Image (cartoon, rainbow, N blue to C red; front, top):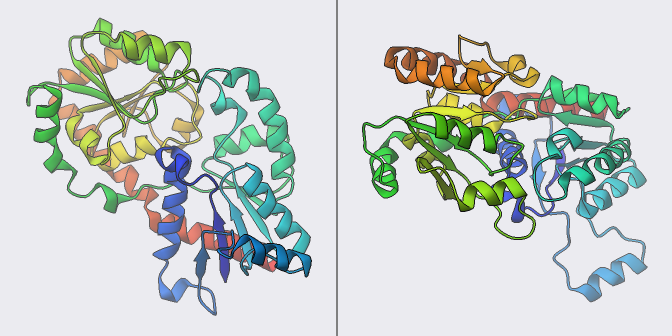
Length: 360
């Protein structure tokens, strides 16, 4: 089985959840046990574009030859013109097409300047784009429900984005140097978030919680500073509360999970939230907005705390700050939950999807 596993704009998307999820898929497929691989083996090709000279490519096209590599299944993780080209090629040549829905119009809102105006047209485009697929994969049942309302008529299969436990090994060793660099006392409680700084991810709530609480708040992740930045991002990152730090991009995510104590994620919309799983894998207690997608995976009071108001977030954070033993217990249960989302599961479920569309 040869899979053309494509992510266009792979470089720019490296710092996004889409890039991380795609990397998880590739690592998961590479780790599939030999005994579970299809007869003839499993090969993953990530670059669909020819390395020939332009003249050679034109010559091949004139002779009716394909410029794409040979493959049995195309799997697209984005929705731009490159993905559309691969999708059209798969349909034209009768090969199965799997599309991965990392984006919905719901989670596109409040991401950058102008994103709200584009959200509804995006939903119509997604309906058309995904209609070409033999199977649409997505990270959660919640995402599946959103897609069904568009409606996307192709079969939809939820598969967890998973968490790469190996990439987090040794995170504890980063705690002291990161805190020293940030000027944070080793024993001070740090409330933290990880990921791109968007209003959709609860930026204003995060900052207003900091204004009301006596702890250090740190958001590890990049943010826009140019004209594409939303008004909320410009406001808070230019003049943050005195106890809030925006670190910008960090090269090693282990630094974030080492430095923080309580993961606070008041996001308004998620397809799953890889950073949540990563925090859980590191044994951190997590306080999340009470969204259906989180109730799908987690249980309030067992492996997380779910709250739907700013007052609820304040009370939850205060309670955890005052009770180190509760933080420890919640973190241990969170780690157990993250263990159910290992990459081995992602690889097994992806392979089952590929075999199903090939048989169909």
